[in-house]
Amino acid sequence: MRALTVQPGRAHTLAVEDVAEPSAGPGELRVAGLAIGVCGTDKEIAAGEYGWAPPGRDRLILGHESLGRVLTAPPDSEFGEGDLVVGVVRRPDPVPCGACAHGEFDMCRNGRYTERGIKEIDGYGSEIWCVETDYAIKLDDGLGDAGVLIEPTTVVAKAWEQVYRIGQRAWFEPRTALVTGAGPVGLLAALLGVQHGLEVHVLDRVTDGPKPEIVDALNATYHHTSVEKAVGKIQPDIVIEATGVGALVFDAMTVTGSYGIVALTGVSPKGRALTVDAGGLNREIVLENDAVVGSVNANLRHYRQAAAALTKADPKWLASLITRRVPLHDAANAFTPESDDVKVVVTLDGSH
Image (cartoon, rainbow, N blue to C red):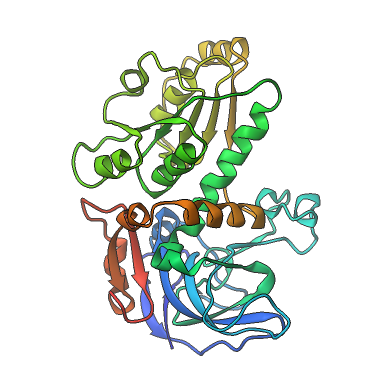
């Protein structure tokens, strides 16, 4: 079978190659791969900046944003042939730490977790893949290929969960939210904000292409100015930061209303210095009872939340997020951005 592989730590090693078909072990599904999403993490791995191959090997099968159909399933499982499924990315560490032992492996305390397609376990970027039933999520068949959006949705499902948990330290009835960044994570964050019944504003730098229309179709408001101009007098109760752009991160911390909560989901590059009024920022956070929280990865609860959110969403809106489909044999093109890209996927089943 064919798979999309890379040699972690070495740039220009991305390749589609023939690998052995996997056999399902006890308690595992055997799945026909339909698609994988391509995100910034995949591009960093392909650039040699990140990633770990499985022990004893020098190549890793990419793909952590998965979608597939079950070929075979254990007879005593909840899965059956033809089910639409995604595989969970992270696995708990073997010790395990306290968080992993309680199913909160997204909050692993010792860093010994592993991740499909990222860290020491092959990903889902192959024509056939296997996954433990305990780490598979069955989807509503009506989602179709939009099911490949589940993994990025888990990231924001967790972020929203964290926001509301923090908000519950006192009376909390948020009305407005600002999302910085209109990439897939930002747009999905906006979707969940609308589903929470909030007035949602989305900030991005582009002025044309599909993003403004996608935001408008959510009945949210699109902005392409500075953070200060975008929020005006709104003073959002919640900010979901989805860019990792250093200046935006700090701007986001200063524009919330009193008792505002900022969830950081974008990963910033190292080595870029900014001049920040740390004293003023600290004063504002303290005197306004503000909170800033970082959020990454997801556990099984967040996958279920993501599946429920996408099932409730407008199918046409979800379809609009997938702006480019690239067949597996041409997968390298999915790693070269185009101007109108939102979410790019690699199809594994011969479809385009």
